Image (cartoon, rainbow, N blue to C red):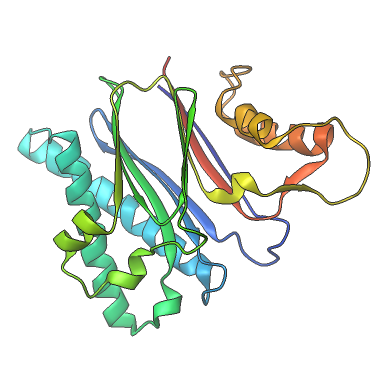
Amino acid sequence: MKFYELSHIGEFHVNYNEDFLVSEEAGKHRQLIAVMDGCSSGTDSHFASTLIGKLLRKIAKQESYEEFAKNVTKELKDQLEQVSLKLFEELSNINRQLDLRSDEILSTLILGIIDTTSSKAEIVIIGDGLIHVNGENIDYENDNKPDYIGYHLNMDKHLWYQTRTEKLTVNEIEDMTISTDGIHTFKNFDGKSYDEIDQIGIMSKFFEDKRELENTNKLKKTLIEMKNQYGLIPSDDLTMIRIVKE
């Protein structure tokens, strides 16, 4: 499987990219992928998304070590749940240790674990974002009011996972992308004339275009193409991970 990554600061943001991404081995044939989007109306929203990303990297490494030490591979769905619960627990602990305000730890999260041998994936969606699976776009949105994990850190972690998250099973990955909602924010900022393209076309360029799949910077080149050919750049931060079966 080939993995492509992109994280780009939006035109409306000056100091920080409030998105973050993770792509880390979580076992011999397992890959943990995640995209986070910090709440723009929160305080230091880049901190929340980055913190979640750093915790997930650590947890993924722990999963790899545990599989090696015990020589046991977990069921994919069980592994995703255990990773999510570990994240919730560690985030809750840090929240208490740093005495953070509720608006300092708000970030959306799309978290997936992929079995790279069977091309299966289990995904959990917390807040909002978009997932493209084999030609289909699945939008997760809550009337622009994401149900952030940071709202629920005082809940029982199992109850949170069962009632406050959405899940998706992908049985056969051919071409899959997880993306923050910045994909919907492409705009023209210079007023010049360019070739025209609609929202469906924009998403197709990022999620379905098969050109230059050998280039690991393919998504970055697509972003440049959007600007040079169509005069479009994202106003909000844009972060995505695309996975293509070889």
